[in-house]
Image (tube, rainbow, N blue to C red; front, side, top):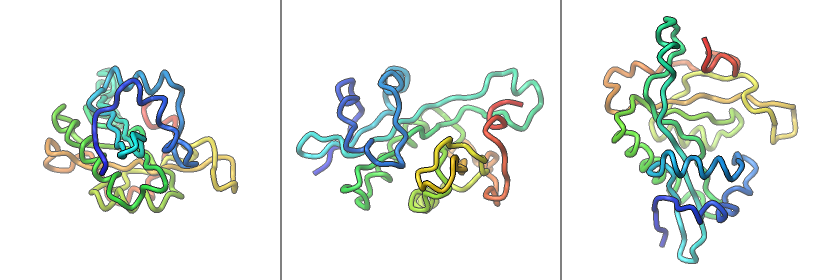
Length: 193
């Protein structure tokens, strides 16, 4: 049996089972604690009967500063949820944990009245892309050279898909676009006009 719960400070030192995966981004401890303090309802773990953290999701809600909106740019990001990290230990995959954790994060962002959810995923991670599509996400745009490393060993960087899913506030799918795989931008163009 697996329990799903909000993360606690002691969990930060117990993420290794998940973080050893080469596709999982690893962060400094301060980064994890920052999420735990600022968005405690959006840092959710799955724990097995042995007390091991076998999966977790970290997310947040955010929006661009008002000056970006005032500049009249289409790059303004309104209040939205962001999946910072979703990972499941390899031996616990294909059990629905990623979908369960993402659903918890979606609900937390719904309670914050966010317009949509977004996330970044490596273009080579076809399994994750298909999983996200199955959860209602679509590719909004391709960010060229988003990741500064390439775990396949074929290059020095890798592109990311910026994927989004409307939440109930966005009744017209205003922040979603079709054909996003072909809409290319560079990392410096994500947030800055």
